[in-house]
Image (tube, rainbow, N blue to C red; front, side, top):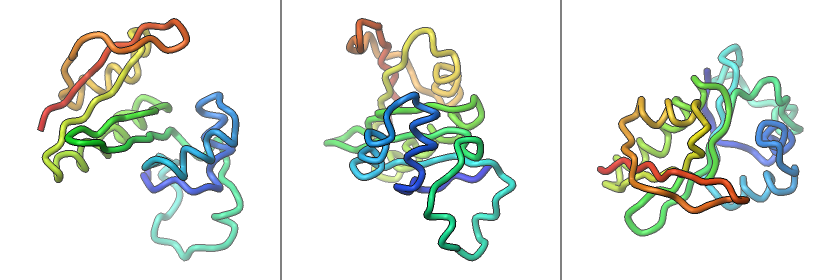
Length: 145
């Protein structure tokens, strides 16, 4: 599995994973730090060709994460994908936060076992209730520096 920065050309593939409109995902790539996990059969050190920037295939992407940093906390704004990809991707803001002595927070639906397991594997601790989104509860998880 390779993890890389998301490109605008990934918007269609991200939209398919997140079940979200492509233009929303394109804006996400511009507004946040977004990383994608892709099938490990791709060589990340191969010469870059123009076809890499014309779009990505949703079947090649295993997941994505978006996050931003404010004050002393890195906030994960979206995470989706396979179980392995979610754990690997969640490690990205953790590494960044560790180097900056910042905490990391993520809001998780109590029914999302994939993200709950990834957060648990990386040492996140339950930090209370999170806000409701579209009427659904969330739980706040936090990892202190």
